[in-house]
Length: 381
Image (cartoon, rainbow, N blue to C red; front, side, top):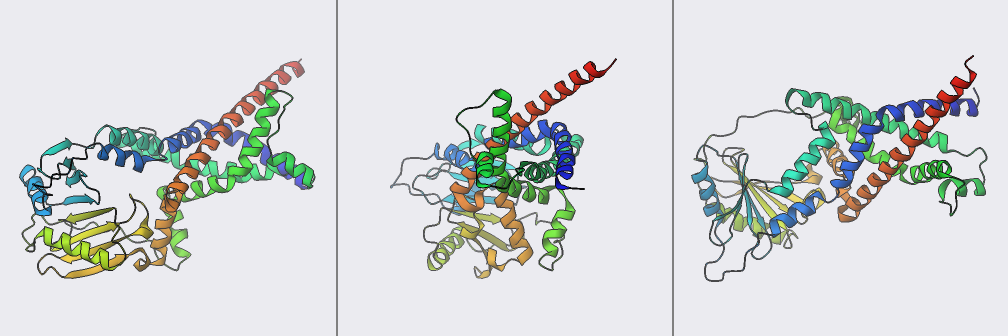
């Protein structure tokens, strides 16, 4: 089989696969655009609750925040408190699944629940992952998006084969990679846009598609970890303590020690510091982060023994097994957050280009189907 014949077979496979998965791929790409700056919008929604600095009262302590949560939910020992390194910032806090924004000077509840912005992004995320299917049907939604993502990867690779010009010359390559000022008709414009946007976005979209397989398929995780000679870590569900009776040292003292540790380790400019208690008996975990989130190279975990106040362990990304490091990198390559704001923006732009690819490809496909139908009617006696 020569290359022309092979290319023809690839074209028809690309054609039918594209029509089959176009709707789901478009939904995933479009919701990907909407999720581009999710973390920033959530942060802005919390900043709206910032308070005027009250020098007389001063900030409430970490112990007071924990006490407020415990009074509201005495049976919930798993608690998060997030301190933002900004004057007057409200204090996000969780008691289990119960979420609050707490006044930094009075301890009053500014907001109960996640808020409108979080709720909107939750819906968009569910559409992106599960097509808004819930309960027992969520698995169906996840399966559809999982295999649509595999088809998407095939479309990218097969599209590269179709893109190759008949003659490999500078002139032909320019025609395939640069937009034109004029087009013969709408069909010509759509076809050319499909080629040009496809070749420029293909490497980036391939990264997004390949990293997404880790969220869906066990075999993808096995492949990743096997590359580093490791087994996929087993998910062990441990019993969490029902009380905080083992915690003797003041949480505020631990918070002060965490700040001192951050200062001594080049994290004096931390943006936020999470304290988690109640997950492991006698242990308080502080997650010290220079970014607004999802930049693992700019954060580390500091564990304290809540009975002695001594540091139990320090965990940075470099301390993880190589396979887990690769998984963490892949996780945030998918959203672009691995490269911060610039990476997020690029992920959003190429997700938008993906929408254009699906749109132009679907119209070209439908137009060809209509042409084939008309030709069949003409040739039918």
